[in-house]
Length: 413
Image (cartoon, rainbow, N blue to C red):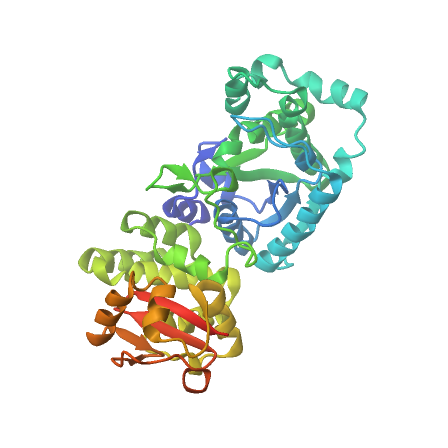
């Protein structure tokens, strides 16, 4: 299967500046660029889908230039509803450093180079920019762009700073074409207008044909919102922002109507393997086999196999048969970071602890749970109403479970 055919079959192609995809992806090895503005110190799932497509390109011999917008990040791509708060150079630069490292960890060093557009935008003269670049754009064109159009119709309007943003991104494409031979830019579908501005600028200035392809926005079908920081539902790649356990749980809980789409976009499984998982899903949806594979694959890609194994151990401890005593120190730390944790005084009655940890609404209900055999401490059922939690017997961290799914950790003081 040609690369263009696989990318289309996986669902990566949303818009293209040239209708024959084979010309873009199959006929020659290109220098491709993708830009990300450092408005945060980590990429998220919305960015990651673009990275996955780019990884397919790199694996097929295309060369990638990863642009972190240290310059454009100080301006900000116009939002459709409000003016962005301007960031300081120091804050932007800190984000640039972290995003570069994150991308290096994912792509590796082969067939990829990194640039920061502050290196050329920071020293760009206003007069020369207006004469050499601004003259190739008309206000008529710019006000047709979705974000600008919506802002012009709002009460807030739009500043000239953000109005000029498409020119800066277009200049990036021209600069990279002239210096590095870039002939393809890839981005999210919400960037289509800005990317096409670059295609047009290269054509007008250099009389050359370059290309643009966008990846579809990933939509949460339950809410109809895209995944991203602006919607407040970002799933971050950085462990400090979304813990590996929470990251794994997100993919594990993907709905049936999205899981096959996500397997194609967010994993390197073959299309044949994904078809097999789709059949399993149809035949036995309750097993959630497709979701388990998705969660494993994406978590391993982003956080590594060792972290994935720790997550499985922690999950088995919370909801399976693994005991806390069987966990490593790293796994216990992961457990404490992600499970409900209640601090209780040592030698407290279990009846009182159940109420304190919200596993029972009253002492009376707590006694009923204990007497019925619904309560377990470190995997062992407790039916003694006089039972007290104790470090010597139970350990400093205790796994307390009521029923099959109600779990809390206790930290004895």
